[in-house]
Image 1 (cartoon, each protein chain N blue to C red):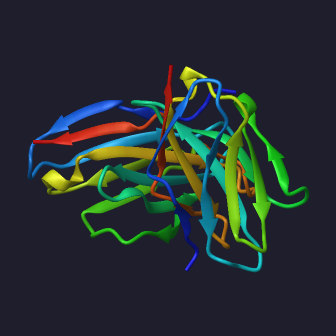
Image 2 (image 1 turned 60 degrees about the vertical axis):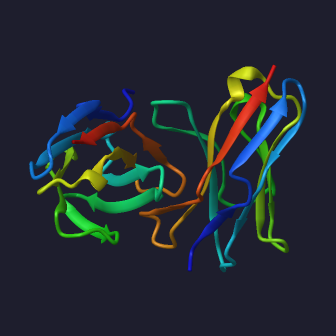
Image 3 (image 1 turned 90 degrees about the vertical axis):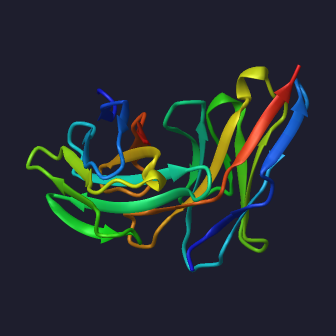
Length: 112
Length: 113
């Protein structure tokens, strides 16, 4: 089986712009979670989608949003980018069973 | 709160020496615990996990961890490290709802030749 894929791998944006990141889960997995990793805050949960519905959301401002499509692929969007949004964004794919989560390689977002 | 605490931010160790990376969790009725490794510019790779059963869990690359309920700990160990083990290690627990991880702050392991 192919692993979790994330595109693009690297992205440079300017403050005030918006960005969309994509995550394709492992085939058959219906849950996708997103995490932000920064040196200062570590790994923080953004949100989780299951069968196109957001089931859980972390403590991030409304500028961070996401969605999931019928094929389980997920996108996250960040509007009005700030310098502090520079981070590695990781998505995790899950079958729904405890312990069956797999992470993608991440998208490195740099905001200048 | 469903949290994990990694007690050491940096651990230097000589090649072929043993290593222990410490992780404590906040007590809960049931807990699912994980150790992940992250190499530079890469995502998270699962080393091992504890869901239930035997308290000694063996993972990939010669790592193992012991779930200790009385001490609320889940320390990661390797009897002999290699240069290639140099990486960031994260302890994590799965939420009770099963759809969110709580991560520790990470331990940077540096293996010295």
